[in-house]
Image (cartoon, rainbow, N blue to C red; front, side):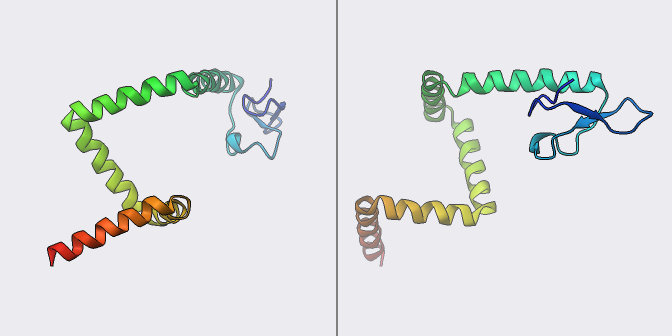
Amino acid sequence: MNCPYCNKELKLLYDNTNVFRCSNIQCKKSIGMAGTPEIWEKVAQIAKIRNAGRKYTTNPEIKEKRKEYLAQKYATDPEFKERVLKNGRKWREINKDKVAERNKKYRETHREYYKEYMKKYNQKKKDNK
């Protein structure tokens, strides 16, 4: 029996038990996992399904259809739009360092857009005073 993630052989955890774990120390996905052969079969089945789903969702045509669907839903469903905005605000609040890093990269790669944005922003500030 092999690990469903790294395909290395599973080894017996204790001599007088029926509990196995992955023999590959570098297998990050199975760290801390131990179980009977039935459990490992179920894990392998789930991993196979997950990988098939990943192949499906990484297909460029499927990605584009999903993007169009979500854009349409965002434009027409106010509850969905509010939920997306709320979750975005929550994520930005938790991940301030990631937001700052992304903004820094954007300012460096889109200098013209950023300058134009800052001009409009500063003009708006002046108008409000």
